[in-house]
Amino acid sequence: MSRWELYDDPHLFAEAARPYLAANPLTCTVITSMVDRLLSGEELPARLNATAHWFGVRRDEGGQVEAVAMRSGDWPPYLQAVDAAAATELAGLVIDRGERPHGANGSPAGARAFCERLVQEWGGRIESRTGTRLFRLEGLRPPQGVPGHPRLAGPDDIELLAGWVEAFHDEADPGTPHSTLPLEVRCEESRQNVRDRMATEGQWVWEDGGEVVSCAATRPAAYGFARIGPVYTPPTRRGRGYAAGVTAAVSQAILDAGATPCLFTDIANPTSNGVYQRIGFVSVEDSVNLIVVDESQLSLAP
Image 1 (spheres, rainbow, N blue to C red):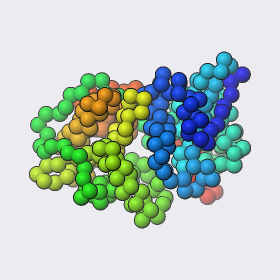
Image 2 (image 1 turned 135 degrees about the vertical axis):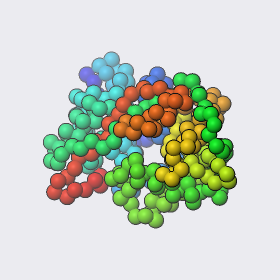
Image 3 (image 1 turned 45 degrees about the vertical axis):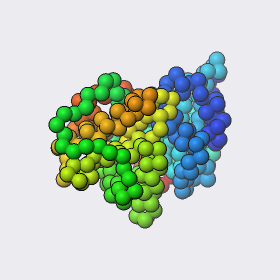
């Protein structure tokens, strides 16, 4: 019969899931990039969970991997290609581990079934946050006539870019675990995020007239795909093509390194979706971000 296997050790998960991840590198980009970060020795914060990270493998009756899942720190579990029945079972296992996640992300049917099991256990109601759409680059078409030029970020850019990372989260991800942290903790995490990207030549900016006006970042490729994000332009600098320009520059750097660029967008934002499609990105699949609201406490903490 089908079954879940949960791993606290990313090395064991990578060994168990490698054939599946290699066969589905694009749709598994969230999980493969997280595994690679952990295997490289990067220390990621796990502020509230006893277990920093866990990974799940779903095997079919023949023993082959048919779906994967993970939880990173205090973020909701992420389910990839998990159907409703498997998600319900996974939620039960997570509850038995003593965890109390307040939501789930990823496969629409699986994420909803997971949350329904949480509601069955503790009550509350399910709410949908911004859905995301996965894109991959099919053929790069750099924008023409954008004033300025791209460059790799340097040490003098760290404070500015850290502030932009915070602004990006405030706009795109309000109410996430990151947003509930004390401001000084959030800012230091954002600085470290920028430093980490710079260390692998993955943090880019667009400069116009000597002023940094937009930014885009990427992490090293995992299984042949490198995911771009965040991409951010301050509100006063939008509408001039800067985001398209810096995203195209990052995409070209990824292509030059022998990988394929991909990225996630906000489904509800036609502007950003249009920007990426015009420079050659095509949609792959949609994901949901669901939360379970505790109506008695109105708390999103895990």
